[in-house]
Image 1 (cartoon, rainbow, N blue to C red):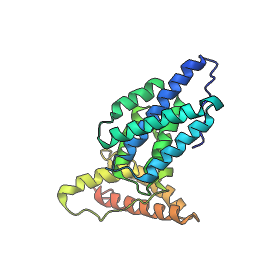
Image 2 (image 1 turned 90 degrees about the vertical axis):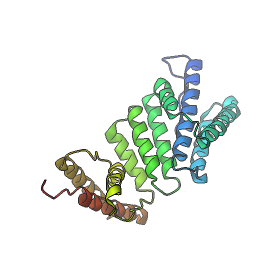
Image 3 (image 1 turned 135 degrees about the horizontal axis):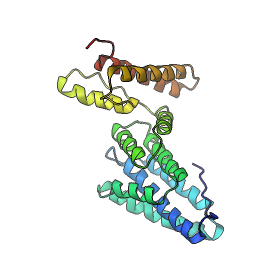
Image 4 (image 1 turned 30 degrees about the vertical axis):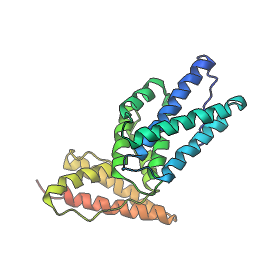
Length: 239
């Protein structure tokens, strides 16, 4: 994540932009640790992604501000980790701060880093994915662009297809989980879901041909999940 912010924006003063960027950087750190803790624990690999991003912000600062920047962001890390672990971190406030201070580019920066954090431990955790889906909407990210970013992240992780659910009480939960993972509205009509699944099948089928064994395995896993969706939603059965 080699993202460099131009602090000298001709449309407003140096100090104003600098203060806005500080708020944005703090919000990004809080967002990422909130996502990291969504599955109940913060994996060291997730923390490493955030620390690397902090180092890049330090490197992009002016020579006289590098250490000050590192100290400020490290303080943000310590505070956000504490709040995330104790579940005192208010994601609604983080979202508000992002919407109040971040540019469109910075919103994408925040979301891409959060997706990198989500995939850092090699597992597409459902709680993390659900949170990111909601957050992306609340900060105004284009749904199609978000879907593309999300799919790229999923190709890098292990998407574990759990044993197909046979317990009637749990089938609805399984439907919601699969819909969230694959990215469709479980309340849509059969035709809408079928159309979406056909598009997704074509996309993941094309990735089966890739030489990268990890991406190929992810594609095979996603196709398996799509097959389960067809069965659970009874796509080809008449109403």
